[in-house]
Length: 311
Image (cartoon, rainbow, N blue to C red; front, side):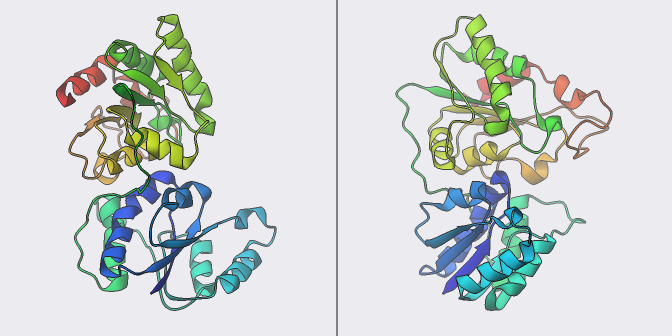
């Protein structure tokens, strides 16, 4: 079977779709998959044994986006099934352009609260007439083997400032744990400044056993380095879901988002730290009340207490 899949745009959503995609592979072991999507999401599948082609979506660079999508669809040829994990206007049009008798586009049922991994799996079950239970997340890159126990610190969250805990508090946690772990500071290209603030705090405390790799990794390297960690401390972010796929012991800090929908999937050593607030979850990119107390009220000691219970 030839299968076309348009992936979710964000790294975290892409990783959360892997359980559903693995169920397709279980039902059709010889399926040949063509993937389409943003670089961040498609790169996660570079080592997937069933993926024969990856096409990066560059339609936004074109002045005539619909024409670009139309021409790309014609070049890609015919598929037995074409599905999209996105629900945007352009995704619907692109799937319409793809040559396939069987097509499906994801649509979020907003009235029902459930984990995003379950939503994606339900979409695949409905599209293929499966009754498959939801399995584990799956990334095929081999995890890095560190020479010493290593703690990962991930202060960023691409969705917006409301999801970000504070660099000085991350630094306090890292300093407290630096005698037990080497420290690895993670972050995307837009999170280098936050990572640098943590690095400066570590230097101020004469901590030397750290690396700051924010903005310096490919998606493959990011996954491999997270996959080999002994402990990960992070906000609600794409790297948090990468850690879940590798079942890395993780403390995840939540504020304005719904952890029941986006916390770590099937990670037996995944913990959530949050403060119950009347205004949360607001699901906003920045705090609408301007106080950000859902994050401010979480202290370094709260994280360290969770670490002690994990280890």
